[in-house]
Image 1 (cartoon, helix red, strand yellow):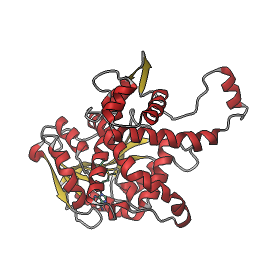
Image 2 (cartoon, rainbow, N blue to C red; image 1 turned 90 degrees about the vertical axis):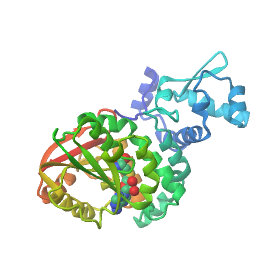
Image 3 (spheres, rainbow, N blue to C red; image 1 turned 135 degrees about the vertical axis):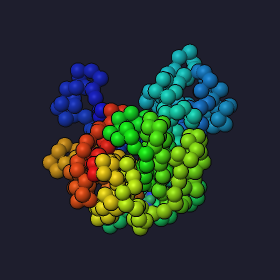
Image 4 (cartoon, helix red, strand yellow; image 1 turned 30 degrees about the vertical axis):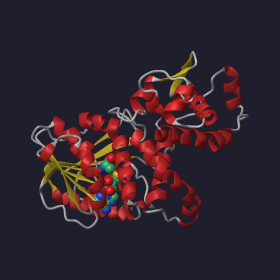
Length: 347
Ligand SMILES: C[S@@+](CC[C@H](N)C(=O)[O-])C[C@H]1O[C@@H](n2cnc3c(N)ncnc32)[C@H](O)[C@@H]1O
């Protein structure tokens, strides 16, 4: 799966092949507008306003209390982007928008859109500074309580689809009883495995400020004591010895330097039981010399900007696992998300 600029007719194909199309204009002028339009639409409730059926522009204006001219422009763009169709003066949500953009759909990314609109959008203006200094924002040290809430809700939304595939395809021992989910936040990955493996319970280790906001999100899953939070810090806490059948590090390695990841991997190597698995669940950086792709490369830059760290290659991740005394077991690439994989090692 790739995000590409693709021709719609033979003349455009020729123009692209002949290098006549000003691609940077699309990147610089069009794409930022597309992204911000979708974020504001979600935040202002535009998708949900059409949830119960096709709406005229006037009906949307009246529900959303927005300016008619501006909303008309936004609706035109959202229609061009495939979120709505427009027929007989009415805007109707497409199946894609219905599944992924509505607030309460189980696969919705709505929370991520609100987080990106209210918190992340401002970070992008620091990209120039990051390029000059190499120092990222380190947002975990500076979020307000409200921003922590958007962040945790954003993480749920980002993993609604992934957690299903993770639950189905993560190569874990069927008899597993104890899991440690480091930086597990909302707990969706733990919940997916606990639903599949009846004997499994999971402890989610996360920062205290995260748990404050993630606790109600986990409670919504109705798993009771089988999945619980433990406030702590992965960099300074001891994980114990020979205790866990599964240890998951999902979307946390990209916030840590290589040295910090090695330190965490060493503690994980000690904390696993024989036969236990260590899963690093991440966007993957291409190996040296491999062609970069858009999702992995943009998340790499974004994590650099936001956390000073970034993505790692499969080889780099497997090196941490090997130096922690574990054997490479499997690499499972996601089918529903390009550039993302589970890198699994076994004790
Ligand atoms: C990007 S989120 C990933 C959440 C979840 N694992 C997922 O895959 O959706 C990173 C999580 O790691 C937590 N985190 C960051 N630094 C941490 C640390 N030093 N120790 C434990 N958790 C940490 C954050 O609070 C956040 O909940």
